[in-house]
Image (cartoon, helix red, strand yellow):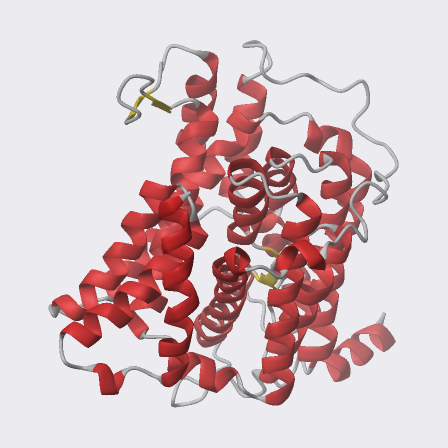
Length: 440
């Protein structure tokens, strides 16, 4: 045992970061509990667009396990990696379900974004992208997709419906099993989160699923243990021919923005929480987690999973004492163990996963509070992006509109010289995209 501890200490620099094997393993367990709900939520979102849920569950777990091991071994940072909810919403709900884009095309769009992220990471050009995107758009991204995700959860639960006469949103029938089950899960998750208990969201899903049994929503499987589902229905199903169209451009950027800014925000924020950043708030060696995330984003679509990224749930592990790459490696082992429990995960209805979407969505809305400027030129583009996302029921349309509105507002304000040339160039196809959308 002492040899193993010596090896782990040297490999992960445990002593240098003032941690122990036991503390890192406990942090890994905490990270796993905090992110395990994604094993249920991600496949549920992708299956909305017609993806085989069993295969998607296997793929999601593999991305989480392999990505987390890579982050731990290569970057030696306490970040777990997995598919982001935002990318899964774009692929499963917006593209496949709402826009009727074939899954193979959607996966190719996601892979194109991932490859772009990888190229920018390898060339060091990510700094140029960070500087080109206006800060108000960056701050509005989280709020836009957060609102979309929270609304999706409310719809899945039956809490919100569409008025057939006016096409406006209205409250659902809260006497039906769906809203009842979702409210039970939401209450449990909120109560545990308020007490900072790890795995609060997962516990909320479990409580909702149990409540759904007598109400007829949760169908218990004959066995909770089985071999992992094959990846055959979704692996290597990418259609780049259908992906290279003008209409795909906003979605390429939507995937890219989610991957890029999620990685940047997660690594810096959680790195600071772990005491790994320098005096200027920078994370030494940040190119390593960027490389792991960009590879996950580029290769994940090959097995059906878009937008792999460092997960914000990593904060739970850091809070539990995780300081090194041993934390995500330990979490990865638990994710691999979950491969044998797929029947249990697939038995959970969408009404039970709705509380997770609502909570995650609401938490993402908080990014907008950092937009403290009172200038209309700063506020209007960000709020336009949020409103367009809600009105169009499309995150891709929202981000495209936000960027286009920013350019227009800056020109009208006489600040055209402050706009990067890259944004001016991007505004041309985005303007054409909205023109074609309005005329069809």
